[in-house]
Image (cartoon, rainbow, N blue to C red):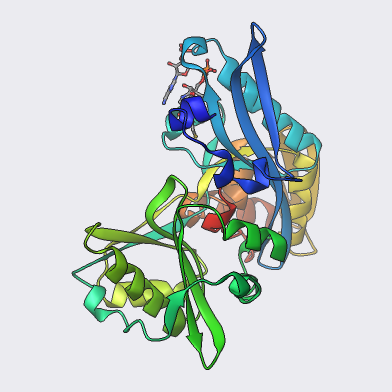
Length: 342
Ligand SMILES: CC(C)(COP(=O)(O)OP(=O)(O)OC[C@H]1O[C@@H](n2cnc3c(N)ncnc32)[C@H](O)[C@@H]1OP(=O)(O)O)[C@@H](O)C(=O)NCCC(=O)NCCS
């Protein structure tokens, strides 16, 4: 991984949940002539969204040695990771791709949404003054974790995991303190990833936006602009950025591949009214039956009905009309904050 993804520079300390002591992450490898030729990492996680728990796996650091490429090893090592995750109960696997084309050709589909706003000098003067903002201290981890847990859409994470992740190198973390209480935090950069991106934060806008202001002032001589990730559930933040006419665009959250249909059937069951019955009818089909009839969803359709890219509800609408049932809790709106990327 270090050879291919970091030109030999260290990578392990950026991903303690995969490479750290007692890490829960797993690493798949394929060898050629007794040497690792292709590899990837994956980690079982639970998404918390809309009161539901969704078991998933996140995949990262997919790499094949240059001299071994084009022989199907990358495809095979990725399949190893996703099939093991599915066997362990993941409803689907997720990954972040710089170039989605390779994954798309291997059955991965765009999934979910996130909006990215641009912080630059055209709007930064409208941010609140960075009053009460200071750098993170070691004993802030508990307060940061409590704030993280206020998000309705997040990865289930322990305090210890948050504490570990706050120590990843190359990250700028500030908190906002009011009357001795930490009321907001925000993280920018993460190892060699997410440069200039404010990728994890929590708190009310009057605690987080002063931190954004601080990050802007601390970085404006180096960067012309910063970017801030906002989840579909972050209406207050979207309203602010739209009010100050910040540029922004809604893109996809990740690429996804279907895992266990039994696990995904349980998610549909939790997300649809009691009158709907859901059954995993094969390794790649799920049937939803309502008073108006049954619809069989296959492969991509399952993910498109559950959590389409950019909230596009067209497949969910078809499911509603064929089952004769309104499904207001679909699509689900999960979010993965930056510290959980692998
Ligand atoms: C992407 C990567 C893992 C593929 O590994 P691999 O072992 O060559 O994979 P496969 O042999 O299964 O697939 C290779 C095929 O994908 C094609 N391909 C490679 N990169 C591609 C891309 N970005 N978009 C579309 N197709 C691509 C190759 O041309 C080849 O096609 P062919 O089979 O018709 O010759 C490898 O190129 C790599 O390590 N790249 C650098 C690291 C990287 O980008 N990792 C992804 C990080 S998220």
